[in-house]
Image 1 (cartoon, rainbow, N blue to C red):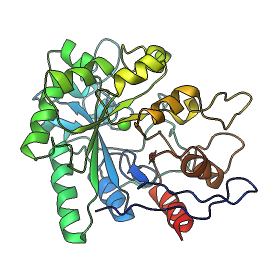
Image 2: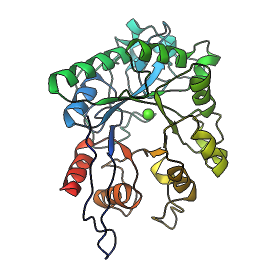
Image 3: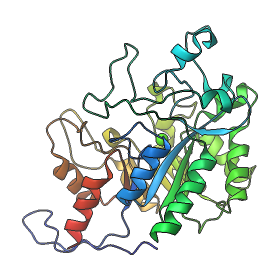
Length: 333
Ligand code: CA
């Protein structure tokens, strides 16, 4: 069990101020993605060893309805699919996990995330030539459970249902399959050590109402321009929208760039919609703390002080668990 952690004697301004913070949840974003190719079993295992509270799994479906752990419905940004199956692109030139069986996907090598021109998205990350493969959700669930058993830890799961409306348009009900998997692993339970996340608010409502989910859920918040879902995030961020969301979810996952009143000029004051969400009792788990992609003009330490101390968020998604964990431990001393 996680123990509530307390930040004591944390100096927010010149005045000495004692803050107490409930358990701060460190979520290993796509596993230890700052160190090894994202979402692989190796990245999951390294993340587990780094001791976060949760390891994240983004979920998409294969043609044979298996849940695999991939951030995108597309494959070419993180695998060698274009070399192994060059004829299997759709008309848009992209390769979709849904067009491949699990057996086919298992033949692919997973590499660091690349831009369309083949350059790495993060210039200073894993550059070795290890052979990594796509993991299934079941593999991650059972492996994390085993690592918990062997290490005496209780690290949780943080799956995200990717593009449910797109999957349904393709004839696949991904949410139903995720819920069945959670139920067969006894994880559809408000007391289980898991959060289920999704960007699509209509789907969150459907999962709660129609699929009768009991699991804790997090509504992810995007920008309307990003094309994550048909959800109108401006409406969702209104006081009425936040109140509505709070009927279905236990937390929200905002982008760190959206939580303040202004980014240009930079402000460190929380936007009203975030304080409204806090007042509604929603957990705030923003994405993503990246040591190698910090907002301009701010150090890692300063950003963590804002997230933990000033904004009093309840957790954070991070590509690098160790610096976040070190900060929390040092602050609690
Ligand atoms: Ca995610």
